[in-house]
Length: 181
Ligand code: FES
Ligand code: FES
Image 1 (cartoon, rainbow, N blue to C red):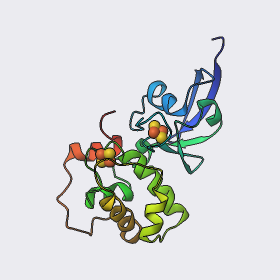
Image 2: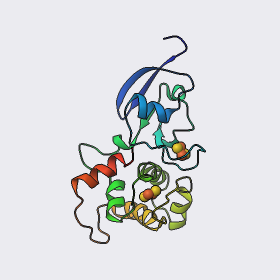
Image 3: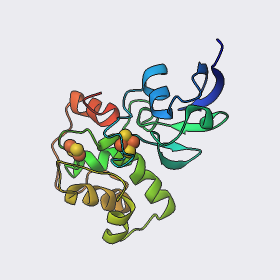
């Protein structure tokens, strides 16, 4: 195809190769070309963080990166975080601590939070609040999100706080894919 560029990106451990428009944003490549709709678009001002993924291990807002800039890179999305049907400890911690309501911000929050703990495995509450500054949530008031991240840091997110009810299958689906996709 003329006017397009071939990109080869390792997404969630799988090599994907596609012809894309040079101006296509990574978030649209993930959602519209690859069908990975767990990565959300929540703004057009690079503000909300709903689109956060890992690019070569670092959390980035995928609406600020072109797909061609991810050529040759490794990308992890929320769909790639859980393994073999098991939730990632951070996803477990969000569930156990009621760190989500509508779930729209949750995939981006979780991708930022996992990067935060990778950089700082034992953060203070202030570190967590600061680390998640780039992710907006209009529902929770952040308190339970911060609690979830601190729980994940301390317990691996095994649900030891607040004795949560066992997650329903559809709720677990929400944790990995988000809602409103
Ligand atoms: Fe990327 Fe809002 S959609 S920051
Ligand atoms: Fe609704 Fe965060 S849970 S925006």
